Length: 590
Image 1 (cartoon, rainbow, N blue to C red):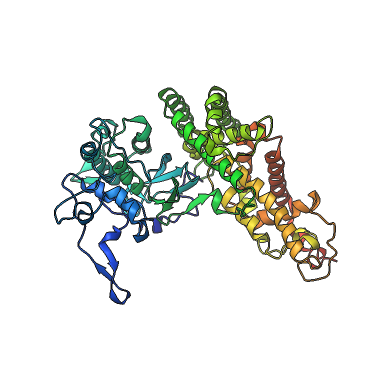
Image 2 (image 1 turned 120 degrees about the vertical axis):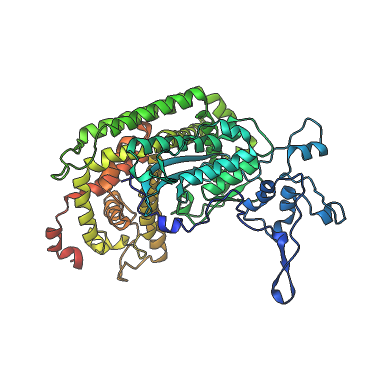
């Protein structure tokens, strides 16, 4: 379940080998420390002198940008300032007014009351959640940190972190910004002879510390909006982004690209997305940037004390309801386990959905004028809309829904998982057995017509289902992946039949003229791709998508393809494998 140590696709053992957090760990080296030498080798030059007016952490800030190599010298000079030989022509200390310098230095170069706050490369909205805790092989409590970068739409799990890592982070930040000391931070109790007894702590104690550490981490990540701006903001970002294992690569113009330290990352742009038509590229880019701008706007809304308190109270109440019950499969060995009723499970999840719906509608209605104002910026002039602005309004709804799920669904993901996974446990055990038996079956087994069998085995469709539906976190993203997978079937079928117009999967002559993919042809293909995707716990997942779907989308394209997803699940669940094995016609196509 989602409340286990980690998702099945995340390798914690590998994660432990990723660069450890340290207050002054450079992510890359200053390009000035090396230069091309004779014979193609690298000759080390004299290290750069750091001005006494510049903190060490500020100088390290430039190392955040893994794209700054010898071809980006001007950009790095902007951050660190010119070298002493360039800036003053002498061998003494000097600085060139890089953005890493403290405000006292910047004030000497500009107006007395001006304070220059560096924001280049800072991730503007990273959502972090500590999903759970677990004991490692040394009986230390480790924390599972989930991250989502609104600017890139990328989600990932941070490297394994322990309480001492959080403590080191706080110490490093305090040297940069003293106001961080005002944020509550938990103590580690239960010390005996200098050693912590974390493994013997009660679940309630562990949960309280997890919650406090999560609150601390979210507060410091939101410091860009919640606290007063100060010239060391970029240094704070260095520590925070290193802590969760992400770097920033400077792109063209004002864009910056998120770079991860080899962690597993899920993003809609990473699976199954086709190269857009050049004619529609401006519209697609405007649409994407507007959506992310709206999400950052909504991200700031959730930082308002009244909204934050509203969401926090609801999340806490929902979590406490589950913690009061020993939810799990009732067995002879553990009869005290709370057997989850399907109807009750669905009803409880619907209450969470209803709260998300209400918050979404509140934002859409109360902030409509602000959202319209954002959409009218010239940055989004390429967006193609219709007369009644339905395309724009759908984009508003999609962006607000996604950010609302980030703030409400994610902290309750484990709670929802407990309800649905255990309620549909028996069905998913049966599905696991059947899907394993069907995994090696050919396309003919699923009665896919000869003219519509794919030479690529529909691998691009299976990938979208596996990564977009099976591995992504947010229900709205999973639902978009279901739609993307369905559309990929039609596009791939059309492409392959245009390349091989007279050949079937077995190179036999087939008349494919005027044989467009129909609804009756679509479902067998979708079932085949469903099996090949090897989605974990598909019964519980299907119920999750049905319950959490935005009600307004159930009557449209999303609802139609969600029904196809449910039909594929039902077909496999009702399939008699013994009877199908005896039906030779599906193998020989007689």
